[in-house]
Image 1 (tube, rainbow, N blue to C red):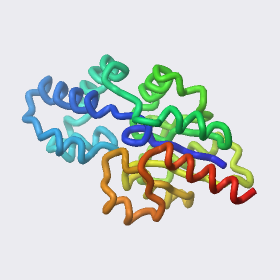
Image 2 (image 1 turned 180 degrees about the vertical axis):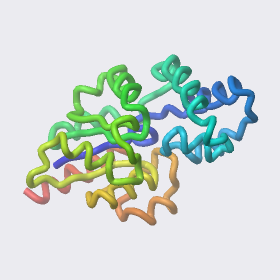
Image 3 (image 1 turned 90 degrees about the horizontal axis):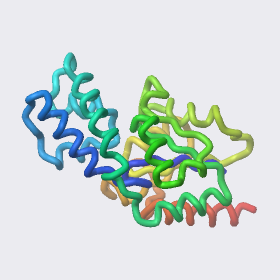
Image 4 (image 1 turned 135 degrees about the vertical axis):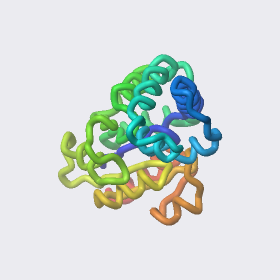
Length: 215
């Protein structure tokens, strides 16, 4: 079995770091500030899409993104936490499956975070925003991850907290599980998958039981 995990809202909570970096960038460029709720509603999308959706001119968006990243890099490890039971989820999953990370976050910073939490060694592959031309919900991030793994005869699952993760799985023709620990609500998630659980650990337990029943 192969299990691909999203990061924000699935394994980690970096909401504080994301919000602070957005407001820092908007301040730096003398732009008005949207509400925190408006920013949080877009978490999961690429940064350029988030900024343009919040009213930033497309011609200027990359300077906002650059400023965001410079600040985020400084604070990310201090202002990001593992979600409850995330470490247990990863450790347990590694005992019966090959693991990967598929995120819209910058892969470089994602790797630093996972190393900070001493979890990176459990993963065989990490695909971040800079590794693909087309981010979620396009199928490319998942397919890019699978190229680096031995998929022969293995069930493939994507675990994520937003519709973008689930649509990405649909487009890549792999299985999906939604978790309620992140940014999309039950009503939204139900439109894209029939397996919805509380958190990553519950998702791993579901898959472990599935593995046992199929052997």
